[in-house]
Length: 282
Image (tube, rainbow, N blue to C red; front, side, top):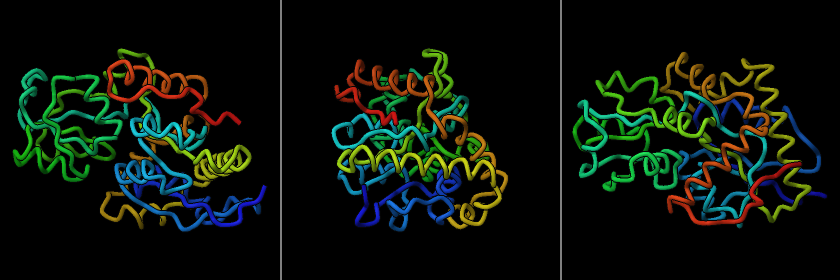
């Protein structure tokens, strides 16, 4: 096994991803059998679209998008974002019951985001969905451009600053109806890389996560560089919320959560039926 050219890799500039990938991207964990090209950083919906185009060898994607990628990509056991108390939030400028949103515009941070799929599972009557970059959703709701919005990432820490009301914590809803942590996003690798290369990529990402946990200050400048406008405490809270034991190993609980997410999405007709060999187990 030998990689003749660097593998392309993409993830978001959010603190949880830069925290996880800092060691890998700076050669602090490495293997002579492969190398990575300079990381491509983009918001998660852009990464989803790139993956649908087969643009990257290794990428962070939403689990909603992953359901559309099963023929081309496989899920790795390391680098995922799952957890409890960390799901997307449905917010409004005025306190409204969910039923009233049926004929109103609701902003989502991308058609293939996990947030969009959760909304469709929770409130299938919300059909006037408006896609916009996640950082524009809170201002749009506050300004009355849309009646409601599904917010993600660090927005859960700051929506009150916009005077917004929490209608539903979609992650909490998921946990209540399934008992599982909410699977937000994972790291996928192209099947065409082959089993040995995929396993090695997975091993290095796991080592990078371990490095981040053991030396959290090492990644501080890298995180700050790509999240320049984020308050330092919000950044730390963000990492604490989205990087956890599931980021090192999905484990039985994590795999069951992803499987349930795919099953419910398929049953609701939100995602296509697909193959079941979606996980890299080595």
